Structures are given as structure tokens and as C-alpha cells.
Length: 127
Image (cartoon, rainbow, N blue to C red; front, top):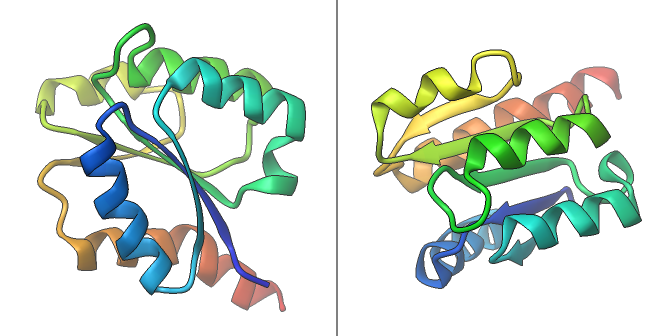
């Protein structure tokens, strides 16, 4: 079974680059360029059944990454989340939201290692 990643980023270029990195590593990736749309998809289709992990940007229009994750946690408490930001000070906004926070630029090998640690390895241990 391919593990599925939801990638939420208002930058199509950034989202496409990350999607290609993840797909080459064997993940199925859904890109949504709007945080509110991502919340709609997650609440309608179910979090844990459709996605293994969410990767989101911090600075986005309408909802910031922190606002998105706070709303996400109301629907999906256990879903692993990676937040990427160019602002170190943004990390404090995620304090009680159970996320993995990383500063950009985030090298492809670091992205893949983090994704593997959060979703692949727990599945291998339980198999």
C-alpha cells in the first residue's frame, strides 16, 4: 500500500517540487493550494483513512499554517503534521499542536527522512 501525503502550500512551485520529491520516493501525494480547501477535504473524506501525513507551509493567505493546524487538530488529532517555514519565530505558534516544525530551506533528503520517520517506520514496527 502506498502511503498518502497531503501537501498544503499556496506556492504552486514549492508544492510541485515537494510533490515530485515525494512521488519519486514512492508516496502518493495530493496537493491543495488553499488551507481552507484542505480542511474541507479532510473533514469530508476523513483524515486518517485517506492520508498518512500532512505537510503544510506556515505563511499562506486566509489561514496561516498555525490556524490551519489548529482547525485540523479538531478533526484529526492523530495525523502527523510537518510544518515548513522560513521564520524561526513561527515555531512558537505550534507549541501545543503536536507538529514537526522545520525551517526552510528543507533539503529533499531531510524531507524524505522526516516523512519516513513519521509514517513509514511506525507501520513497519507494527507489521
